[in-house]
Structures are given as C-alpha cells and as structure tokens.
Figure 1 (spheres, rainbow, N blue to C red):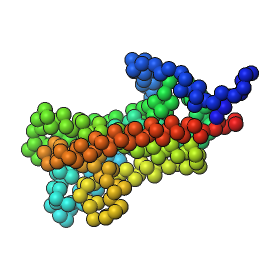
Figure 2: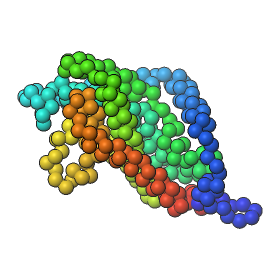
Figure 3: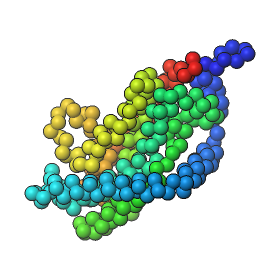
Length: 284
C-alpha cells in the first residue's frame, strides 16, 4: 500500500517499520486505556452484557452436560474417570475462556478490518500493528465463565482428593499460559491469510469451532493416524495443564507444548510482517 504525497509514494510497511516502537511501559499504559474504553462500552450496554453472560454460562453448562452423557454408560473414558473429565472440562472453561476474553473478538474484528480496508489507519499508528489487532477489545461477558471454571477446578480437585503443591500450581500456570499463547498464535497465523484473500473473513468461525477438540482427552485422538500430526498441538492445550494437577504429566510433553507455543508465536510475527509487504489499501 502506498501513500500519495507531494514528493511521491512512500510504502506504508517501510514507513511503519521506520517508526521506533515505544517501550513496554508505554504499551502497558496503552492497554490500560483500552481496558478502560471497553469498561465504558460495557456500562453503556448493560442489557447486552447480561445476555452475553447468560449465553456464556449456558455454553459452559452444555460442556459439562456432554461429559455426563459421555460417562453415563461407562465409569471411565480413554482412561479418564468422570471426575477427571469434569476437571478437564473445567480447565477448558478456564484456558479457552481466557482466549475468548482477550483474543476471540479481536480475531473477528481483524477479519472485518482487513475486509473493509480499515487496516490503513492501524498501520499508520506509531505502535505495533499486531498488538493493536490482537488486544484492542476485551470480552468481559466471558469473565464469569472463567471464574466459574476456576471454582469448578477447585471443587473437582477436592472430589479427587488432590491437594496441588506450589510446584504443581507453577507448572499448571506455565502450561496454561503456553496453551493460551499457542491458540492465539495459531489463530492469528491462519487469519493473516485474509490479507491475501479477504473473502475468507469468516475463517475465524471455523477456527473457534475447530478448537473445541481441546475439550476432550488427547488420548481420544490417538487412533487417527497421520491426521493427528495436524491435531496434535490442539489436543495438548487443555489436556496437559489438567495432567499437571493430576500429577500424571510427562515432562517431555510439557516441553513440547511450550516449544510449539513459542514457535507458533514467532511464526505469526514472520507471517504477519511478510503479509504487510503484499498488503494494498482499499484506495490503491
């Protein structure tokens, strides 16, 4: 994309890259402002907020109902007892719930920004464009779902007679953060293709539903043969944090998840920078 000026054309990606990035403290202040703006919008539409909260909690209830149906005829499934599967579902509500709070709406908005040519204004701002596209909106109505998931995690740990140690909690938090980073990086990398093909703007809907495979044990997909290579990272993002508190986690699996997360995040940066070189504005 080019900007037409008196002295000729200046490529926007080069212009953006020439602007020095502000320090981390400045980014934190910007994000704090974004959070405040989202709170203001939330207070302006309280009715919509309550409806969204109800819908989010209803989806959470459906997830637990599906586990009850799954275990109605068998005490365990793929080596997981009913309470362990309930714990897995609670962890899903926490991990994927965080993604829905901070990431999902932004991925939907990213598709529309690119499709309708609004990316120009973001590229002209003196800050990282991926940051603005990824963290502009916060879906506060999903927060009750995350809190409910946290409460249920405690309840099912109590039912399983498990008292996590500080090291267990440390591994749990590390793997949960790695899972959130992986899911974000995976989504963002795929959504970058809308720069080349704007008609794929609804691709995020497929990604959201496709990520639902994470709510079931990873052992469930071992019989899929070569297809599991593509599914493998998604089968880990909730299973491994749950195994961390169940004390059945193999350290190599945890390292694999962390490596996948860091690798996909770096890939998302590379793919995005490359896509910007091919981006043309709506006016050009």
